[in-house]
Image (cartoon, rainbow, N blue to C red; front, side, top):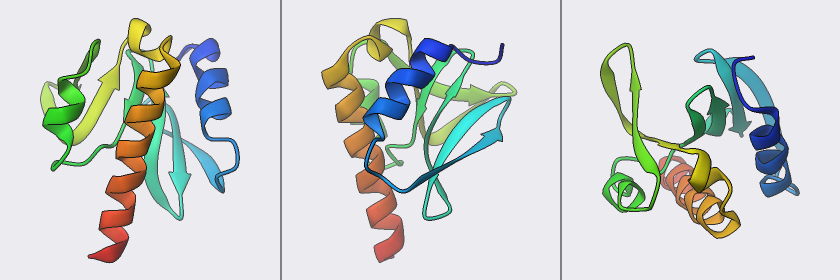
Amino acid sequence: MAWDRGHEALMRWDLEGLDIRDKRMFGGLCFMLDGAMLCGLMRAGGLYRPGKAAQAAALALPDVAAMEMGGRRMGGYVVAGEDAMADDALRAQLLEMSLACLRDLRAA
């Protein structure tokens, strides 16, 4: 299994009410909003896209780390570990940062 199905259920619950499409990417499952990646799931945990402007704030949260792929740090993306995924308020904060990132991308 490429991602935790319990985390998937939590993330789908968090995304309720948004017009989300899912897509398999990065060896995991990503959730797309208006064709842009919002968040997702990987073996390492939840994947969120706070964007480069909010990445430092996201990394300051407990059990949140920089996203790395192939040994390279992915700017603007973070991974929420097991404890972070278990925390409803923390997931909500990361999701709001990710939604703000997509709003900023649309406005640019």
